[in-house]
Length: 111
Image (cartoon, rainbow, N blue to C red; front, top):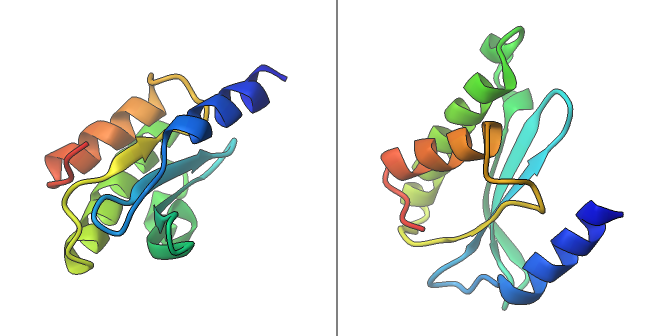
């Protein structure tokens, strides 16, 4: 119940535009997904998932998060996006969420 309330509260404040899309992170027990979303036109600009790389099998979620942060930043550069709004999906900024964010920042995204 807590997570649903947290997600709704965050989504009420965080919205993406074409100039500054929303970087949405979804975390499951074994994998992670990230999307760059323009909420105004309801379009996904770029997306990446840990399921697409077979080399990550057996790695920890923190290592997967670091890889995913670099991948989504690379796709953002291709789409000519530099600034984003980070939507952590109700998760606490710790562990794999923090690793993802720091990796994306190191690869060139600003948020």
